[in-house]
Image (cartoon, rainbow, N blue to C red; front, top):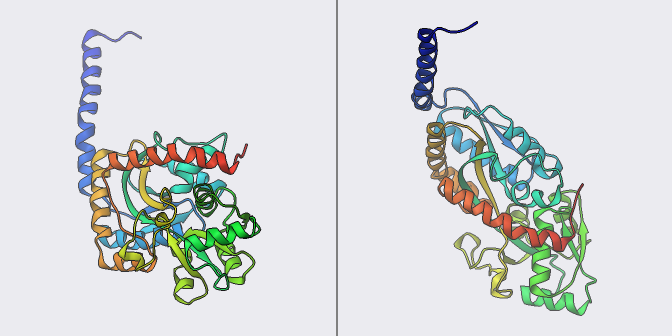
Length: 329
């Protein structure tokens, strides 16, 4: 059935009116945002360092927003399962993602069929934490510095166990980088998760690991592990007088991070409001205290800076993953 000129004009006018009203509708939604609970996807298992930091952040965001932020752990396939769920979520601001190193910058090189593009499929909000890795050894080891550990491993011709949370984990790749840049060898012993890998060093099954600080903070304080250095580029008050690994291996810098993403297409006014609430949340004294206890530094940036940060790290991870010989079909 043909439309008359009048009816065609009326339809066109109606469509244009809808298009014109969309930004206003998004702005109105942002004024009232959030008005019900928010789901925060964490693509990691409960109890992991990423999960611990996500829960601390979610509590602070709950207080800042006045709405409950509910953690939804979706672990599996190196974090790619949770990222895919986040990619396909409704872009209304009520599903957000606590993203981290593994799924965003390591998984793209490990999985041949990645179900998401880390740079194109999400809206970037801001970083909210930088977590150094800490190099720890069993207290019985004679090494009391990074230099002494390297010399010890060389004297043992690589017959010293380096524990990791599994192939492709942050502790594995941090170890690969250290072995490569420090020019020494050690036997990689993968475990099923960060907890078991750290426990192996405590028990003396493995001699050392370099792992996210939250996983070993308490064990260092109790004397069950000896810390030799951290992965930030220079000494940091957060870690007291602990030296950086870079003081011995100048090129070494490999820390984890946590940042906030939203599904692609989330309206900008809602993203702006979400970032505003995030900045408020990380300024909370309670969050700062909790992050300090986890040896994690609060850090925020703009959406553009966050995207550029991930792009840079994504580029840098390619050679590291190749050196580790990782690939999952």
